[in-house]
Length: 312
Image 1 (cartoon, rainbow, N blue to C red):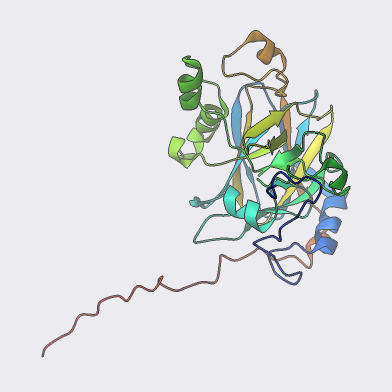
Image 2 (image 1 turned 45 degrees about the horizontal axis):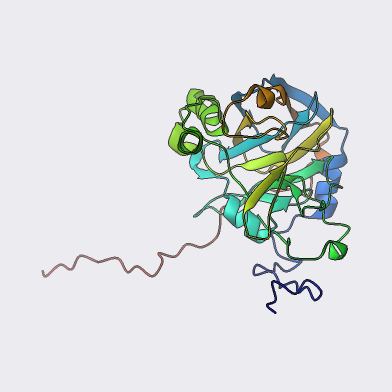
Protein backbone atom coordinates (compact mmCIF):
# COMPACT_ATOMS: atom_id res chain seq x y z
CA UNK A 1 0.00 0.00 0.00
CA UNK A 2 1.36 3.40 -0.93
CA UNK A 3 1.79 6.25 1.55
CA UNK A 4 -0.99 8.10 -0.27
CA UNK A 5 -3.42 5.27 0.35
CA UNK A 6 -2.43 4.57 3.94
CA UNK A 7 -4.78 6.92 5.72
CA UNK A 8 -4.17 5.19 9.07
CA UNK A 9 -0.57 6.39 9.21
CA UNK A 10 -0.58 9.97 7.98
CA UNK A 11 2.80 11.62 7.64
CA UNK A 12 3.22 15.36 7.66
CA UNK A 13 6.36 16.39 5.74
CA UNK A 14 8.46 19.26 6.99
CA UNK A 15 7.99 22.64 5.34
CA UNK A 16 10.57 23.29 2.62
CA UNK A 17 10.78 26.95 3.64
CA UNK A 18 11.31 26.42 7.35
CA UNK A 19 11.65 30.02 8.53
CA UNK A 20 13.53 30.55 11.84
CA UNK A 21 11.66 32.42 14.54
CA UNK A 22 14.19 35.26 14.50
CA UNK A 23 13.89 35.71 10.73
CA UNK A 24 12.64 39.08 9.40
CA UNK A 25 10.18 37.04 7.32
CA UNK A 26 7.99 36.69 10.39
CA UNK A 27 6.02 39.59 11.77
CA UNK A 28 6.63 40.90 15.29
CA UNK A 29 3.41 39.68 16.88
CA UNK A 30 3.57 42.19 19.72
CA UNK A 31 3.81 45.10 17.27
CA UNK A 32 1.15 43.86 14.86
CA UNK A 33 -1.22 42.88 17.64
CA UNK A 34 -0.96 46.48 18.83
CA UNK A 35 -1.61 47.78 15.32
CA UNK A 36 -4.58 45.48 14.79
CA UNK A 37 -6.15 46.28 18.14
CA UNK A 38 -5.72 50.06 18.12
CA UNK A 39 -8.78 52.27 18.24
CA UNK A 40 -6.56 55.29 17.57
CA UNK A 41 -7.50 55.34 13.92
CA UNK A 42 -9.13 57.89 11.64
CA UNK A 43 -11.18 56.86 8.60
CA UNK A 44 -9.68 58.58 5.55
CA UNK A 45 -11.48 56.72 2.74
CA UNK A 46 -14.36 54.30 2.41
CA UNK A 47 -16.52 53.01 -0.41
CA UNK A 48 -18.81 50.16 -1.38
CA UNK A 49 -17.81 48.08 -4.38
CA UNK A 50 -20.91 46.97 -6.35
CA UNK A 51 -21.36 43.44 -7.63
CA UNK A 52 -19.31 42.27 -10.62
CA UNK A 53 -17.13 45.36 -10.67
CA UNK A 54 -13.64 46.49 -9.72
CA UNK A 55 -11.97 49.52 -8.21
CA UNK A 56 -8.43 50.59 -7.34
CA UNK A 57 -7.33 52.79 -4.44
CA UNK A 58 -4.18 53.94 -2.65
CA UNK A 59 -3.16 52.88 0.85
CA UNK A 60 -0.26 55.00 2.21
CA UNK A 61 2.43 53.24 4.22
CA UNK A 62 1.61 53.01 7.90
CA UNK A 63 -2.14 52.91 7.21
CA UNK A 64 -4.66 50.12 7.79
CA UNK A 65 -7.00 48.80 5.10
CA UNK A 66 -10.11 46.79 5.93
CA UNK A 67 -12.16 44.74 3.44
CA UNK A 68 -15.69 43.92 4.58
CA UNK A 69 -18.77 41.92 3.62
CA UNK A 70 -21.52 44.45 4.46
CA UNK A 71 -24.42 42.33 3.18
CA UNK A 72 -23.07 38.81 3.60
CA UNK A 73 -20.91 36.28 1.78
CA UNK A 74 -19.01 37.49 -1.29
CA UNK A 75 -15.61 36.53 -2.67
CA UNK A 76 -13.11 39.26 -3.55
CA UNK A 77 -9.99 39.09 -5.74
CA UNK A 78 -7.21 41.41 -4.54
CA UNK A 79 -4.15 42.74 -6.40
CA UNK A 80 -1.41 44.87 -4.79
CA UNK A 81 1.41 46.92 -6.32
CA UNK A 82 4.05 49.29 -5.00
CA UNK A 83 2.48 52.69 -5.64
CA UNK A 84 5.70 54.20 -6.97
CA UNK A 85 6.92 51.21 -8.97
CA UNK A 86 4.23 48.89 -10.37
CA UNK A 87 6.89 46.40 -11.45
CA UNK A 88 6.99 45.54 -7.76
CA UNK A 89 3.78 43.66 -7.11
CA UNK A 90 2.29 40.89 -5.01
CA UNK A 91 3.90 37.46 -5.48
CA UNK A 92 1.43 34.74 -4.52
CA UNK A 93 3.82 31.79 -5.01
CA UNK A 94 6.57 33.08 -2.71
CA UNK A 95 4.00 34.16 -0.11
CA UNK A 96 2.60 30.65 -0.22
CA UNK A 97 6.07 29.18 0.34
CA UNK A 98 7.11 31.54 3.13
CA UNK A 99 3.82 31.34 5.03
CA UNK A 100 1.02 29.03 3.86
CA UNK A 101 -1.63 28.58 1.20
CA UNK A 102 -4.43 30.21 3.20
CA UNK A 103 -3.26 33.24 5.10
CA UNK A 104 -4.47 35.04 8.20
CA UNK A 105 -3.26 37.30 11.03
CA UNK A 106 0.53 37.92 11.17
CA UNK A 107 1.10 36.48 7.69
CA UNK A 108 2.57 38.87 5.14
CA UNK A 109 2.00 39.36 1.41
CA UNK A 110 5.38 39.54 -0.35
CA UNK A 111 6.48 41.34 -3.49
CA UNK A 112 8.13 39.81 -6.54
CA UNK A 113 11.82 39.69 -7.43
CA UNK A 114 14.13 41.51 -7.27
CA UNK A 115 12.39 43.41 -4.46
CA UNK A 116 11.15 40.61 -2.19
CA UNK A 117 9.77 42.51 0.78
CA UNK A 118 6.43 42.51 2.59
CA UNK A 119 3.90 44.78 0.94
CA UNK A 120 1.40 44.30 3.76
CA UNK A 121 1.02 42.40 7.02
CA UNK A 122 -2.38 40.93 7.95
CA UNK A 123 -3.63 42.41 11.22
CA UNK A 124 -7.27 41.37 11.42
CA UNK A 125 -9.46 38.51 10.20
CA UNK A 126 -12.96 37.84 11.53
CA UNK A 127 -12.94 34.39 9.89
CA UNK A 128 -9.69 33.27 11.51
CA UNK A 129 -11.51 30.51 13.41
CA UNK A 130 -12.89 28.84 10.25
CA UNK A 131 -10.20 26.17 10.44
CA UNK A 132 -10.35 23.13 8.16
CA UNK A 133 -13.77 21.90 7.09
CA UNK A 134 -15.00 18.37 6.34
CA UNK A 135 -13.76 18.65 2.73
CA UNK A 136 -10.35 19.93 3.89
CA UNK A 137 -11.22 23.38 2.60
CA UNK A 138 -9.76 26.54 4.11
CA UNK A 139 -10.51 30.21 3.68
CA UNK A 140 -8.44 33.14 2.16
CA UNK A 141 -6.55 31.11 -0.50
CA UNK A 142 -2.81 31.63 -1.52
CA UNK A 143 -1.87 27.14 -1.80
CA UNK A 144 -1.08 24.50 0.62
CA UNK A 145 -3.14 21.41 1.15
CA UNK A 146 -3.09 18.65 3.71
CA UNK A 147 -6.11 16.92 2.21
CA UNK A 148 -4.46 13.50 2.59
CA UNK A 149 -4.59 13.64 6.37
CA UNK A 150 -7.44 11.96 8.16
CA UNK A 151 -9.95 14.52 9.41
CA UNK A 152 -9.37 13.46 13.02
CA UNK A 153 -5.78 14.67 12.69
CA UNK A 154 -6.73 18.21 11.65
CA UNK A 155 -5.10 20.76 13.94
CA UNK A 156 -7.67 22.79 15.84
CA UNK A 157 -5.72 25.98 15.27
CA UNK A 158 -5.57 25.73 11.47
CA UNK A 159 -7.41 28.95 10.69
CA UNK A 160 -7.05 30.63 7.33
CA UNK A 161 -9.46 32.96 5.55
CA UNK A 162 -7.60 34.34 2.51
CA UNK A 163 -6.36 31.95 -0.10
CA UNK A 164 -3.40 31.83 -2.47
CA UNK A 165 -4.26 28.47 -3.99
CA UNK A 166 -6.29 29.60 -6.95
CA UNK A 167 -6.25 32.72 -9.05
CA UNK A 168 -8.72 35.09 -10.67
CA UNK A 169 -11.42 34.01 -13.09
CA UNK A 170 -10.94 35.42 -16.58
CA UNK A 171 -12.81 35.73 -19.90
CA UNK A 172 -10.28 33.65 -21.82
CA UNK A 173 -10.73 30.43 -19.89
CA UNK A 174 -14.46 31.18 -19.64
CA UNK A 175 -14.72 31.31 -23.45
CA UNK A 176 -12.71 28.11 -23.70
CA UNK A 177 -14.80 26.19 -21.16
CA UNK A 178 -18.28 27.57 -21.79
CA UNK A 179 -18.12 28.86 -25.36
CA UNK A 180 -19.55 32.17 -24.15
CA UNK A 181 -18.07 35.66 -23.90
CA UNK A 182 -18.44 37.41 -20.54
CA UNK A 183 -16.80 40.74 -19.70
CA UNK A 184 -17.14 40.85 -15.90
CA UNK A 185 -14.80 38.18 -14.63
CA UNK A 186 -12.29 39.26 -11.98
CA UNK A 187 -9.46 39.66 -14.51
CA UNK A 188 -11.58 42.06 -16.54
CA UNK A 189 -12.84 43.90 -13.45
CA UNK A 190 -9.26 44.43 -12.25
CA UNK A 191 -8.14 45.53 -15.70
CA UNK A 192 -10.78 48.26 -15.83
CA UNK A 193 -10.04 49.29 -12.24
CA UNK A 194 -6.36 50.09 -12.81
CA UNK A 195 -6.67 52.00 -16.09
CA UNK A 196 -6.97 55.39 -14.30
CA UNK A 197 -3.58 54.71 -12.66
CA UNK A 198 -1.77 54.22 -15.95
CA UNK A 199 -1.72 50.43 -15.70
CA UNK A 200 -3.09 47.89 -18.16
CA UNK A 201 -4.17 44.26 -18.49
CA UNK A 202 -0.61 42.90 -18.34
CA UNK A 203 -0.19 44.48 -14.89
CA UNK A 204 -2.95 42.29 -13.43
CA UNK A 205 -1.37 39.38 -11.55
CA UNK A 206 -2.21 36.43 -9.33
CA UNK A 207 -4.60 37.47 -6.62
CA UNK A 208 -5.35 36.90 -2.98
CA UNK A 209 -8.84 35.36 -2.91
CA UNK A 210 -10.45 36.98 0.12
CA UNK A 211 -13.45 35.38 1.87
CA UNK A 212 -13.05 32.31 -0.36
CA UNK A 213 -12.85 28.66 0.74
CA UNK A 214 -10.69 26.38 -1.41
CA UNK A 215 -8.65 23.21 -1.29
CA UNK A 216 -7.28 20.29 -3.29
CA UNK A 217 -9.18 17.04 -3.61
CA UNK A 218 -7.60 13.59 -3.43
CA UNK A 219 -6.65 13.85 -7.10
CA UNK A 220 -4.83 17.11 -6.47
CA UNK A 221 -7.56 19.08 -8.24
CA UNK A 222 -8.62 22.55 -7.16
CA UNK A 223 -12.06 22.96 -5.60
CA UNK A 224 -14.08 25.88 -4.21
CA UNK A 225 -16.84 26.03 -1.61
CA UNK A 226 -19.43 28.63 -0.70
CA UNK A 227 -18.03 31.57 1.26
CA UNK A 228 -18.76 31.39 5.00
CA UNK A 229 -18.69 35.19 5.46
CA UNK A 230 -21.56 36.90 7.24
CA UNK A 231 -22.66 40.54 7.20
CA UNK A 232 -19.92 42.58 8.87
CA UNK A 233 -17.06 40.09 8.48
CA UNK A 234 -13.70 41.67 7.64
CA UNK A 235 -10.13 41.09 6.50
CA UNK A 236 -7.63 43.78 7.51
CA UNK A 237 -4.02 44.52 6.61
CA UNK A 238 -1.32 47.08 7.41
CA UNK A 239 0.53 48.76 4.50
CA UNK A 240 4.30 48.38 4.91
CA UNK A 241 5.00 50.70 1.96
CA UNK A 242 2.84 52.98 -0.20
CA UNK A 243 0.66 50.60 -2.19
CA UNK A 244 -1.96 50.57 -4.91
CA UNK A 245 -4.70 48.02 -4.34
CA UNK A 246 -7.38 46.78 -6.72
CA UNK A 247 -10.33 44.60 -5.77
CA UNK A 248 -12.90 42.72 -7.83
CA UNK A 249 -16.26 41.51 -6.56
CA UNK A 250 -16.20 38.06 -8.12
CA UNK A 251 -19.05 37.44 -10.61
CA UNK A 252 -19.51 34.08 -8.91
CA UNK A 253 -20.69 35.90 -5.78
CA UNK A 254 -20.40 33.64 -2.75
CA UNK A 255 -19.63 30.65 -5.06
CA UNK A 256 -22.68 28.70 -3.89
CA UNK A 257 -23.89 28.51 -7.51
CA UNK A 258 -20.57 28.74 -9.38
CA UNK A 259 -20.44 27.83 -13.05
CA UNK A 260 -18.74 29.12 -16.19
CA UNK A 261 -22.03 30.08 -17.80
CA UNK A 262 -23.31 33.43 -16.47
CA UNK A 263 -26.51 32.08 -14.92
CA UNK A 264 -29.19 34.10 -13.16
CA UNK A 265 -28.82 31.86 -10.12
CA UNK A 266 -25.15 32.79 -9.85
CA UNK A 267 -25.95 36.49 -10.20
CA UNK A 268 -28.37 36.25 -7.29
CA UNK A 269 -25.50 35.03 -5.08
CA UNK A 270 -23.54 38.27 -5.70
CA UNK A 271 -23.18 40.95 -3.03
CA UNK A 272 -21.09 44.11 -2.64
CA UNK A 273 -17.83 44.43 -0.71
CA UNK A 274 -16.73 47.33 1.46
CA UNK A 275 -13.32 49.02 1.63
CA UNK A 276 -12.09 51.24 4.47
CA UNK A 277 -8.69 52.95 4.87
CA UNK A 278 -7.57 54.23 8.27
CA UNK A 279 -4.75 56.49 9.44
CA UNK A 280 -3.24 55.58 12.80
CA UNK A 281 -3.46 58.73 14.94
CA UNK A 282 -1.33 57.67 17.92
CA UNK A 283 2.39 57.77 16.96
CA UNK A 284 3.23 55.46 19.87
CA UNK A 285 1.48 52.58 18.07
CA UNK A 286 4.14 52.64 15.33
CA UNK A 287 7.20 53.55 17.39
CA UNK A 288 8.81 50.14 16.77
CA UNK A 289 7.89 49.97 13.09
CA UNK A 290 10.10 50.74 10.08
CA UNK A 291 9.15 50.42 6.39
CA UNK A 292 10.95 47.39 4.90
CA UNK A 293 13.74 47.79 2.38
CA UNK A 294 14.00 45.71 -0.80
CA UNK A 295 16.00 42.47 -0.64
CA UNK A 296 19.69 43.03 0.12
CA UNK A 297 21.07 40.82 -2.66
CA UNK A 298 23.14 43.06 -4.95
CA UNK A 299 24.92 40.45 -7.04
CA UNK A 300 24.76 40.07 -10.81
CA UNK A 301 23.69 36.38 -10.86
CA UNK A 302 27.24 35.31 -11.67
CA UNK A 303 27.45 37.54 -14.73
CA UNK A 304 30.86 39.11 -15.30
CA UNK A 305 30.52 42.32 -17.25
CA UNK A 306 33.09 42.97 -20.00
CA UNK A 307 35.54 45.79 -19.47
CA UNK A 308 36.89 47.91 -22.30
CA UNK A 309 40.63 47.53 -22.65
CA UNK A 310 42.50 50.50 -24.03
CA UNK A 311 45.64 49.54 -25.96
CA UNK A 312 47.30 52.94 -25.59
